[in-house]
Figure 1 (cartoon, rainbow over the protein chains, first blue to last red):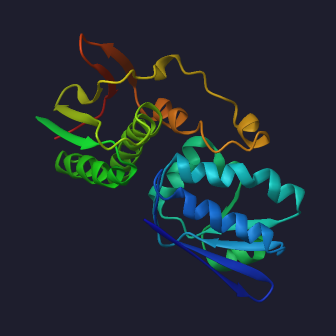
Figure 2: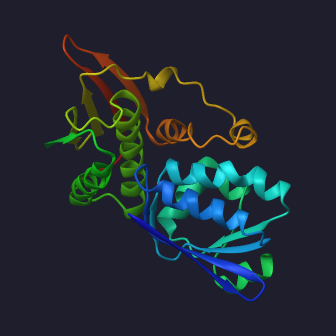
Length: 111
Length: 139
């Protein structure tokens, strides 16, 4: 079960993921990222503070859009992951492929 | 100690499977981070079976058995009547290829291989078992 919200905050959109992203709920995240790309905005912060769990289905969503981010010159920074969620990104080495920061302020300056 | 849990092949059951595994691992003194990675690996194998082997048919079921042994660690048996894909033979795709092809799948089994110490597929007369072993200190 996951909720994904998107609000405009000045120059960037803030996407907030709340809950658990697994094989049954990853479609919600997928739709939200697809819409974000379609919106034409070029800068996104992804707030993972309330992301309690992510499995490969959720990681796959991020992976599958990496090319689109590049192609469309979209900057996206994830922040606020708890240790367990961060660990999942690290096991696969996704922390090297995506921009991940600890706090929101750091994430904003990495945009 | 032995534990077992049988669930219908519905994706919505993954959450219950995770809670079940987490509860047991907590009871045996695993750190939060160790417990969470093992929960993830079990979630990945079960999701794979429910979605690919059973096409989310709720009339089918899979069973999870967990044995915790103080000197050996933890053995997770995922038991299924359907054919179990041999993860041990699974050749990891390169991350770059997954990105280029914009694939969403293929990451789960990589995680399982990286998290578990041993992966074994056992074919019984009427069932197949995916046995995942983690050698870790337990209480």
